[in-house]
Length: 166
Image 1 (cartoon, rainbow, N blue to C red):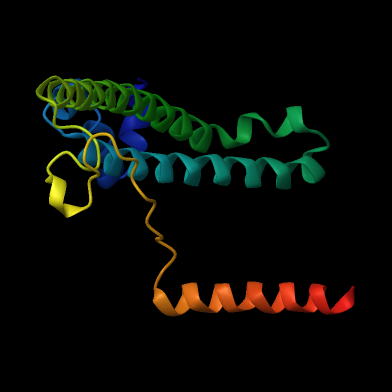
Image 2 (cartoon, helix red, strand yellow; image 1 turned 180 degrees about the horizontal axis):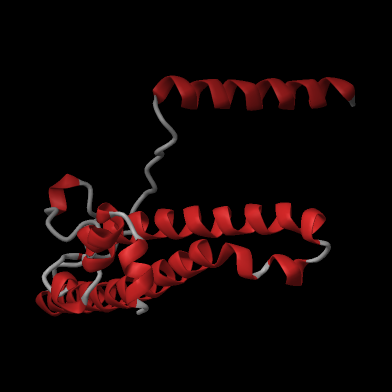
């Protein structure tokens, strides 16, 4: 990174960039990395927006985009520093997410090997599971007895209306 750009940053911005160094992010968990990622992204967006607004304003004054390019170097450089910091954090988030996915997969495989899978894994045969040889009846899960009764009544009214027509 350009030391001149880092020296032109505020103390809080320098600390934010320092928080993205490999030694600093090595001990962070996935949630902390995502929070840091959000903070870095906000800072980058701020300087990208500042750069674009100033560049757009200088087009009319200077007579073209190329003429306004050198006047807004500081915001462009700061945006680049935050972009590099964001890339470092994004890579680390990807590493942590991959580790978490591997852990979850290992847990699921261990549970499957133990036979503890499925919605009725811990249920006994008296709690609704069908004895072997019989098919299980489906249970309604629409939200309650009154709602089910209302649905049946509406269906009966529709059928009665059709029957009355013809």
